[in-house]
Length: 418
Ligand code: UD1
Image: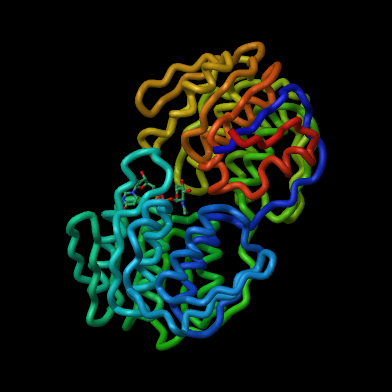
C-alpha cells in the first residue's frame, strides 16, 4: 500500500496539464465493441479505472495496442458476451459494457458492478431502459443476464437523469431498429462527448446536453480516431486546491461552462477567475469567505464529484457552509478524517455543516473513496505541519500522476510505500 506524505502550507503556482475526462474515456472504451473496425482513442489517462476497463475489453476478446497515451482497440475477434465478476467488482463503469455488448452480441452477462462505496448506486434505470428496447433480463446469483433477439427503438422516460443509464441506453440504441427517444436524459458534458464520438463512427445521435436524446438506429458503425474532452472534475480539484492554499494556477482543456457551478462558488469565496475559450486562470489569497450553502445536483448543478474537495476548502473558510449531497447516500466518509486535522464538521444524513476554523493541523488520515481522497490531500496541503494520506488505491483510480502535478505547482508531497 502507498501513502502521501504532505508538508502543508505551500501556495500553488503554475500550469496544470489536464487528463482526458475519466467519465468520458470509460464509456468510449466500452463503445469500442460496437464496431469490428479499429477504434483509436488518444489522450488515455493512466488511471486504474481505465486500466480495468481495458482489461475487461481484453476479456471479451478485443486486441488492444497501447502507445503512450493512445489506445487502439480492435474488437473484430471479440467473442464473449460475459464480463468476468472479478473485474466488474473493481469498476462501476463496467456496467456500460451491457449496452455495447448487447448491441454487438444481442446478449450480455455481467455481475453487479463495484466502484466507490458512496451509497446504494442501483442500476434499475439502466435495466428498465434496456427492457424498453426489447431486452429480456434475468437477475440471478449476483449476475444480470440480458438477451435480445433484436433491439428495437422506444420512448424512454428516465425517473432521474442518471448519467450511466443515459449512456448505457444510447449504447444499446445506436444500432437498434427505429428511433429511440430518451427524455429526462442526463445533460453532463460527457454525454455530449459520447454523442460526438458515436456520430464520428457513423451513428445518428442528437440532442445530448439538452435533456432529450434522440437516437436513430443505423445498420453499421465504422472505426474512428478520437480525442476525448478534458476532465472537468480533475480541473475542479486543482482549482479548489489552489483556492484553498492560495496562489495562481492556469489550465486549458476544460471550457468554463463545463464547471460553471464550481467557478461561481469559487468567485463567491473570493477567488479571481478569468476564463477564455477553454482556458481558466484562478488567483487566490488563500483566505476564503464561506458561501452559505452548496447543494449537489445533476449537471449543470454543482457536481457531486466535487463535493468532497469543495468541503475541504470550506473547513478553513471564514464562516459556515451547509453542504447538501443530493445524489449519493454515503458521500461524507472523508468528514471523520478531516476532523482529525481539526476541521469542525457535523454530518446529518445528506447534510454537512462545516464551520470554518482558523487552521488545520497535520494528521494521518485514510482515503476511503476517490473524491474523498482528493479532499484529504487538499486539506493536507493547507494544514500546518506534516500529514499522511494513507491508501492511494482510490485516488489512483481517477487522478493521473496526482502527486507529480501537485509537485509541479509547488506542493510538498511525496509518495511512499508502506
Ligand atoms: C456518474 C459518474 C460519477 C458521478 C455520477 C453523478 C461515470 C463513470 N461516473 O456515475 O462519477 O458521481 O455520474 O454525476 O460517469 N440511480 C438510480 N438508478 C439507476 C442509476 C442511478 O437510482 O439505475 C441514482 C443513483 O443512485 C444516484 C443518481 O441516480 O443517486 C445519479 O447516479 P448516476 O447519474 O447514474 O451516476 P453514475 O452514472 O453511477
